[in-house]
Length: 187
Image 1 (tube, rainbow, N blue to C red):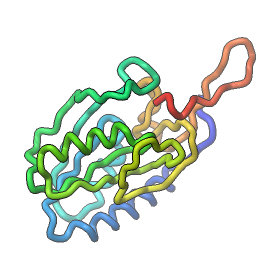
Image 2 (cartoon, helix red, strand yellow; image 1 turned 30 degrees about the vertical axis):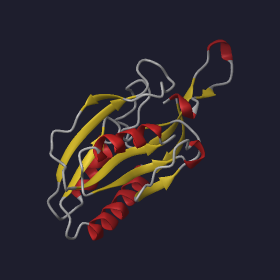
Image 3 (cartoon, one colour; image 1 turned 90 degrees about the vertical axis):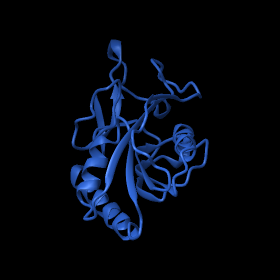
Image 4 (cartoon, one colour; image 1 turned 90 degrees about the horizontal axis):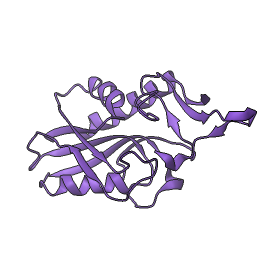
């Protein structure tokens, strides 16, 4: 069940407008391509790029480090690769949330091997308390506490992505026990 609302739709849209303004100022003289990390980024990437006045190219990459498990395996498997040639291009890598940083670091390595001019991370959310690998986030929406969140693209077992707000997820327990918050590291 849904727990505390972490960010309402108005808060999210204000963050997206701010980030779009910051990125718009950074785009001058660049050959931008926005690469979204699927699937969680879809709502954020769409709203963000629609606010930009300069034409931009969009592509997607999908990786998995969890498989059917709820904990990371530590190795990233490329599920869907980008189709664009990014050599000499300025990549804005769009991520819904930066948690441990390990998957994002691996995605950055994959893209660096294609010789872009630059890679800048754009993230809606960050959980710095969970970071295991440092990654530079050039454009950050906001930091959140160490809770598992769903909505606005973020999911639990492929559900809840479509919610317009971002909520903490709380699991109901059998036998009348108190509900349990989903561990943040189970994504």
